[in-house]
Amino acid sequence: MGSPHVSPEEKAKFVALLQEGWNVKDAAASINRSYAWAKQFAAELRRESPEKVAVTALPIITGPKPYSALSPIAKDCLNDFGRFRARYFGRLSSPWQEDAANRVVQLLESPYKEYVVVNCPPGSGKSTLFTHDIPVWLTCRSRSIRGFIGSSTQKLANYYLRRSRGALERLQPMQASTEDLSRGLARDADTTVTHDYGLFKPSNRLVPWSQFQFTVEQLAETPVGEKETTWSAWGWDSEYLGYRVNIIVWDDLVTPDTMATLEKREDMQKKWHDEAETRLEPAGLLILQGQRLRSDDHYRYCLDLETGIDELDEHLESLGEEQLPREKKYHHIVYKAHYEDRCKADYDPSVHSLLAKPYSKDGTGGCLLDPARLSWRELKAVMA
Image (tube, rainbow, N blue to C red; front, side, top):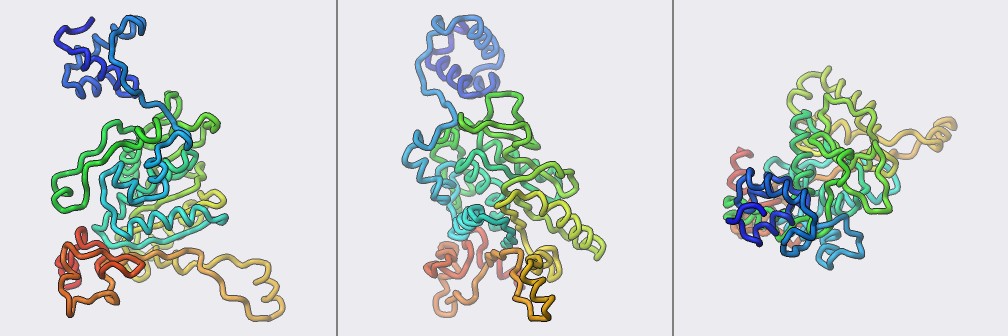
């Protein structure tokens, strides 16, 4: 059956890839065979009964896997973000990246709605961290999570979502680029999240799996409703009034154009209150992250917001008493490119080298946030 020049091992691998969810064209390319042969062989497979197809038994990826069925390393990766990134994406994490991921988990575990502004320097890998690595990690931790990735444009938001969707359907480990390997920023991934946690791409074709939104395959005891999209993508000018989610990530939303005039800043502030903040479910988390542009930008506006007036405030005001200090509505998480209070370059120039230890909150690191990604030479040029 099929071409006599195709070995039984190649046929077995082809069948296994189809069973894992690969399409015919990609499965053929994986074994270096023509699409024409693959279509013919796949058609013959469909006509023949399984008993008549001589293939070597290969492990088939099923899904999703319950926690009890996970390997020890897969379980550990759910709590160790640095290990998770290295194992599935091949990325080597800096202390600040692991800290950011753990802060996100802590805030998600709060019983209240939480709002946070995260400011990071450009070039630190913040967009990949917040729009890809952390969302994929959170999805592996809980398939029932619902969130959306927002950006200044729909096109950019779709790009971010496609990357996350691709990671959740990948069947072969990622290979690090030559540049990242040489700079010590990455290595080849060990395996895929699909291999360790089971299939994420839904078997039901009616469940959304597109560039705008997707819903991952749920555990057997968790039903999926029509509106329960796992992740969706939204540009600032998109309509997203029907969606309420557990986590919202707005990446680099603040641009020079949105801050150009007082009118534009006020328009953004109104839409932020009316639409962006109201999409959050109880106990949800909203993240606004990016680079500060000016002293009165939208990040500053959010950081100045206070919690609303409660009954105690109203009672004290009615008595003419001094009201209690109000809490800030937004947490502020800042990662600086260079920490001057940690700098010891005056008597140890090696703290500014590419091989220096990166900054860490526990005081064991150096003064640079990420010497490999944000070198001292680059920072000096920006400062000058």
